[in-house]
Structures are given as structure tokens and as C-alpha cells.
Image (tube, rainbow over all chains, first blue to last red; front, side, top):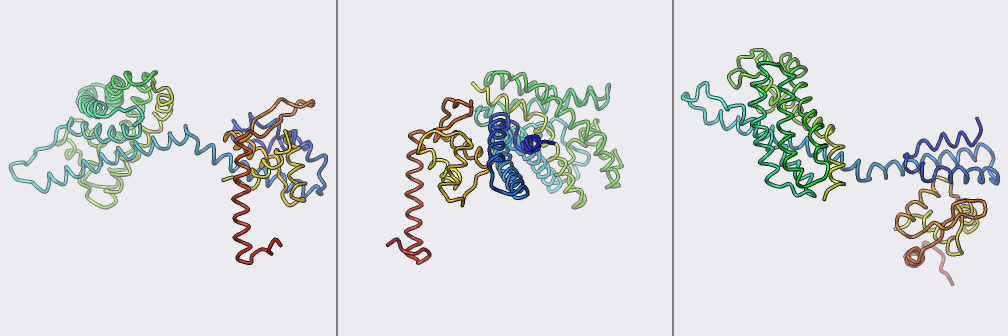
Length: 284
Length: 102
């Protein structure tokens, strides 16, 4: 392998954009340096490799801090916070409900759409903060909450016919479609939002209704008694999706509840990050 | 604030445009071999200086190598950095860290 090839190999440590801009010039400079260097071969290569590693590290750090990636991380954090906020809100409601318990309320439960509204509110508040440049404000929050509430009711109806798959798609589609209505007046290419967002929400629902139900069933014998969930809604998936909303029976369940909500947010954030990034750069 | 490599790149370009290897050689000569820039450090500095508007690319030379020259802003930044360093050196002298100039 020629020295030039070795150096080109070292260049792969740099971010692609930097390599494209300066790669050829760096190879030329390397060739000049090698021809005229007064260093012994070992010292020369030690100098070149150290220089490449340090400079590549700096460039990679700079690239990480650059706008699109930073935006993606901020967006995913915002979604995770929003979903966790929803869990906190739900836990507070559950706590208040049990604190004010009265025998007359025996068997009473919040209807599914209220849980949907809470999920939509929590997520959209933090999303609108992260997308503050678009000034989405109250219409975004109201529409998200309304669509999540409506979507949950519709999804439960569909789930009786199609199972969790249809449930996921209906819930995700209704929420994403509602948010698109708000977005289209603000940005070009708002349609990019609908597919990733509905896929993300659907994925969350599907994940919750399969993997998580097994985890929860294994962790907590109470959760094996699904009649507990049936008192809340006819759709078992709803209960599992909004697991963080239930009063936890133990610390591990408490932690798991919030971890699920945060993971929900991260999934939504990860799948929608690219479309959000495109929208912000296209903002009118 | 400029890094040591960036400041020295500006210093050598005060004499006129240079290509990458020319800058490396001049920095080595200017510092009596104390500062050796590798290609990675050099182009990292060049990129930052170009982004900050302190350098600009000029027409490639006869061998079609990329050349860089100082902008007016770059000259000002080099002067400010030199002033800042001289204040630091004066402070170090006052504390006896360096021998006095006289």
C-alpha cells in the first residue's frame, strides 16, 4: 500500500463534507510534506497519524454540533419530555382520583378519550416549544389534543375488527393528519410530516401492545389480570400504551412506566426528526 | 479567540497569498521549528478562518494548488490577537515569569 493510500485511509476519519472540500488539497500537502520532511519514517508517521486523529476528532465534534444533528437531538429530547410529561400528568390525575375516592365512584373510570387528550396535550406542548420558530402555539396543542382524543376512540372501534395493527395506524393517522392541518399553513412540504408521524405513533402502539404487555405481565402479577384494564376501556392496548398513567404498585413499575413514556417520545422523535428538520429549513 | 495554529496561519499570510504546504513551511520557519502544522491541523484552521471571513481563497497557482489570502477582517483579527498576546506577555513579565525586555 502506497503512503498516499494510507493517508487517504486516514482521511476517512473526517466528516464527509470536510473530506469532500479539503481531501485532495490535504493529500497534496501530505505528499509535499513527505517529500521534504526531515523526520525519520517512524517519527513522520507518528506526527501524521496524531495530526489526523486530533484534527478529525475536532471536525467530527464540530459536525455533531452543526444544525441538523443538533436539531434532531433537541427534537427527540423534546418528544421524550413531552411523553414523560404526559405520564406525570396522568399519574397526578390517577393520584387525585384515588385520593378523592368515594364508594359512589366504585367502578367509575376515565373514558379513553381523556387519556388520548392528555397524551396529545403533553406531546404537543413540548413539540410546539421545540418548533417555536414556526409559532405553532395554541392551535397546534388544541388540534393535537382533540385528534389524539378522537383518534383513540376511533382506534378502539377499529381494533375490535382488525386488532392492534389497525389500532396503531388509525391512532397515528388521525393525530398526524390533524397536526398536518395546522402545519400546512406554516411551512412548505408539511405533507412530509404526516407519514413519519403516523408511522411513529403506530410503531409506539404496536410496541406497547406486544413487547410491553409481556414485560408487564412478567413483572407484576396484577397486570396479568386483564379485567383491571377492561374496567378502563374495552381496548387492552390503550391501557398498555398509557401504562404510565396508572398508579404504580411498586418502584420498579413506577420507573418502568416513565421509561415507557420516555421511550415512546424518543421513537416519535427519531422517526419524525428528518421531516421536522426539512420543515424548519423550508419555513416560510 | 484564535488558536495558536490559526494565529500563525494569519501571520504568515500577512506576507501575501500562499498554498497549503507554503503556509506549513512558513509557520515552521517563523517559529524556528517550534510549531509544525500537519495537514489536518492546517486545513482545520483554514476552514475555520474561511468560515469566519478572515481568509479568502484566491486563484489557484501555476500548479493548480488552492491558495489563500488574508482579508481586511483577517488582518484586523491578527492585529487584535497580537495585542492581546502582548498584554499577556507584559503581565507575565510583571510577575517575573519572563525576563524583562530591556
